[in-house]
Length: 373
Image (cartoon, rainbow, N blue to C red; front, side):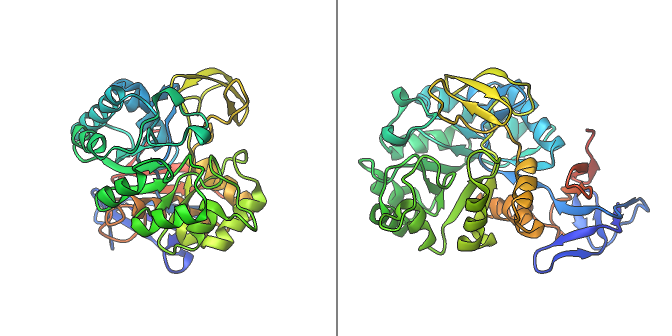
């Protein structure tokens, strides 16, 4: 296939007009089959990677249901998210083990839908004071042995682990595992100094920046300030128009730079579904419009998929090239798959999305094949 006429995302130049070719499953410098696709008036971007979402289309990763995971993977692919790293919740180890095993089996079977490239353990190593929509009954002190058991159950798929660095044993945990997984600070009451120590010991990401952590202020910069002062630290941002004010989204891109921001969706099972009553991590959630909330009004994840979050970021004033970088390039780097996904260089997987002039998904190619939408 040769895609012609479109504005193509380029790592160095932003958007340029050139052809995109692929032979078989990989991007290439030329195409041998004679097929072409006219992308005139459209944008051509790499498939996105969502490294933090819990569910969609009525299903949740934490259910540990193989059929549900399949539905999720197919829905994400239809939305131009070609790589997924679904997130668990704060659950008992027995259920976490189950979801790791289900993910490993899904990956081994090479099922249709977005490629499952990792598992994100958002919990149970979090703070009760900032648990948000996590179930406090199942919180657990940072535990290296537990993590290793879950990694074994997942057959090496665990790529991200969130924790509150102020919890007992957290610093020792970071030192022990930082070479094996990406440690991300989350659901925390940590001050600036505590967060800086965690980053010094090897933590290198912040889970949904600003949410479930102390506010960034002029005398108490907290986790946000510590992340800003740590050049190798990336920050996740939920850009659904609910979790973060547009002015703050713009400020984050200005302060951290587009190379350090990772757009995430943080969707729960109601994404792609009508308003109504749902659950998240064993807790009841009410969904109305873009809002998903617990009974006390606490935000319980998002219902806006990553492609829509990227479009929302652009509507807030973020340049499209920066938004694409934050939704495709940076997350792929974070979970170690950038050598094969996340940009449009020859040799990488032919996972390509065509956006129309309004940034709506027009077509998706996955492993060189068109995706039925």
